[in-house]
Length: 143
Image 1 (cartoon, one colour):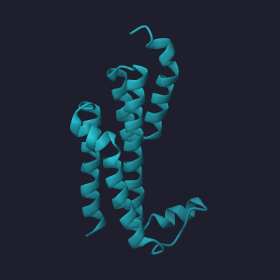
Image 2 (cartoon, one colour; image 1 turned 120 degrees about the horizontal axis):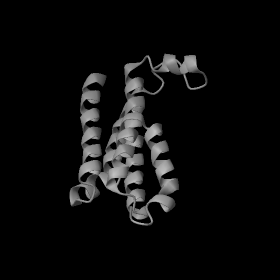
Image 3 (cartoon, rainbow, N blue to C red; image 1 turned 135 degrees about the vertical axis):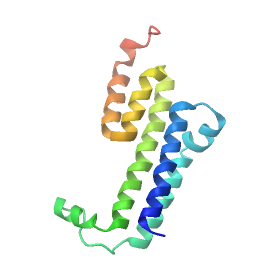
Image 4 (tube, rainbow, N blue to C red; image 1 turned 60 degrees about the vertical axis):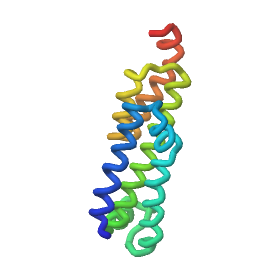
């Protein structure tokens, strides 16, 4: 199997998880597969296998930016980094969804946060964090 094939499987797999989370968050299938962490777990298993079979096969390292650039010249290591993002961003989206429900944050407010978390991880988290901080002021009265 090539890195391109694994990439072409992992990307739509993650996207399906995000769609279920955004569109059908409270269905049995979404709760079982995505909200339980299983979907992120499956991506993590792929990550684990890539690391196990490619650890130490690339130059570079994490101690400097040029070292990271050299490390990610290896397609398998680059793919592992990408799957790392997919797994953790989805896990963060799950937390955002659960937190929004617990705090009574409307879905129409959550959806842009989820989209940005999916596309731009930390920016989506930052937006959700700001929404979460203002929750007491904006949503307690049912607005």
